[in-house]
Image 1 (cartoon, rainbow, N blue to C red):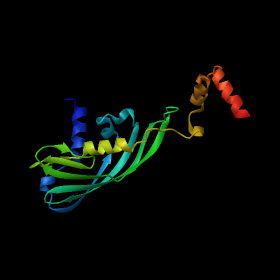
Image 2 (tube, rainbow, N blue to C red):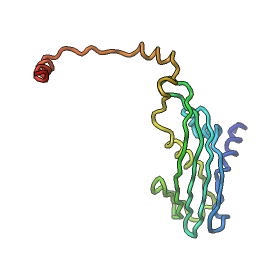
Image 3 (cartoon, rainbow, N blue to C red):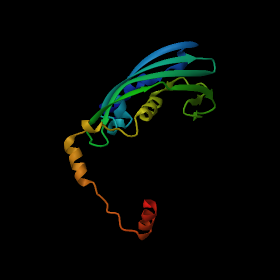
Image 4 (spheres, helix red, strand yellow):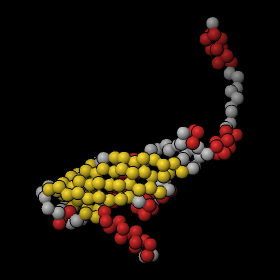
Length: 178
């Protein structure tokens, strides 16, 4: 395994919570999602760079874990119109309930079942999915902030269709104009 991959995996190990060793009650954790995290999960094509602070309040009960996350930060992504970098604010407060059961299972987006006796909980995949869902589907600058050269080129490529004369429409237009 290349050393850069080992380094990345080592850095992602910080997202593994040793749940078995935690006492019952509330525990606080802080994380930082950065370029290495985004690259590891293949978000580097969507996210050019960024940094998201994650605060986690984990409450351990005898039969389950309740995780409350707070994500706050910014990522830079290409503008869908001009492809220039666009900074987007990321905020969210997702929750995750982890229950113990027979086998690994994701009941819903907010409820996960892990096998009885599981000693560790890896939250990196949950954080990846959360960030991915917090990024808007359409990311564009305001028109005046887009690269003017690209906008000019796009405007020259717009095809203006000529609507063919349809006699049925002509009849309807005459009725409408009366």
